[in-house]
Image (cartoon, rainbow, N blue to C red; front, side, top):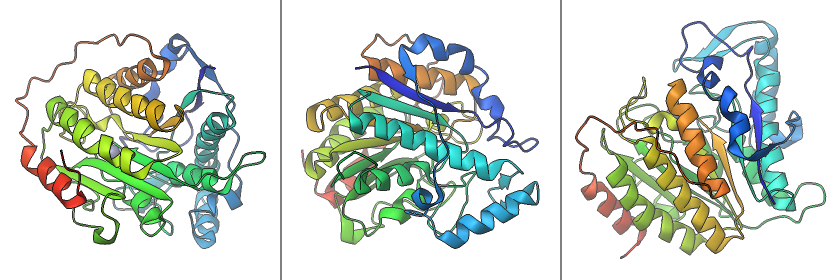
Length: 340
Ligand SMILES: [Zn+2]
């Protein structure tokens, strides 16, 4: 069984001078054939599939807004164009294709390379460059059971984008079938994701708010001391990963401190956890990442982990001294009862 991927570049979902734009993929596109993975066709998600996460009124009003032409719909700023409604359905559908391929056993694991991204989109609000919450829609699809597949009972989502996935958290705040663990820079958009934010759901909703310039060393500790017990205690049947390469040290809009080797380490750990706990069923879903080189190198690091191939380090070491995030990591472990 091979690794699969979908590619949804949405070239018409474009707004001048906006960081979330089609050129994010400029250095990735020529490398796609080198990843030893099988490309799947993405088909648009159906409205009722999107409506498993989003309010029908949001879906219909977005369709209307997009029809009227380019617009900015929040302060992030989140933009839409005439094609954005269809683009967002295709990004969600591309994510569904990956998850269904893995759950049906036709692919070993997968990566949905899609835009617009999704993890900020809340059930009743598009925001933060996100229209529909691709990963949340895919998690609900796994729980419902797509055609010919048995419904799954437990899905874990790990989110290593530099921003907190407020939309994903909101979708599953009170849904005990889904666990959510996010690492993110504290003090930036969207402002949510403090570690004490979900006292009713310790161990299931796990937030790791990090100081700026937390880097590979901190994330190695997080992988071992937080991701491992998070997956071990929740026992998912499927792991989904919000992969945001804006956690790279030279991302233009954030200041975390990972390198491509750091993305490989995190991704390999998650692939190994999936092998150990849920039959290898893991799907990565692209979120942010606003430097085209970081996005291409980060994607290559994820494919190296998914296909069990050697990681080729592009040599993008950080020139900055890493902030010590030990205090926060220990607080998060204590709050969630993740003891050494
Ligand atoms: Zn982000």
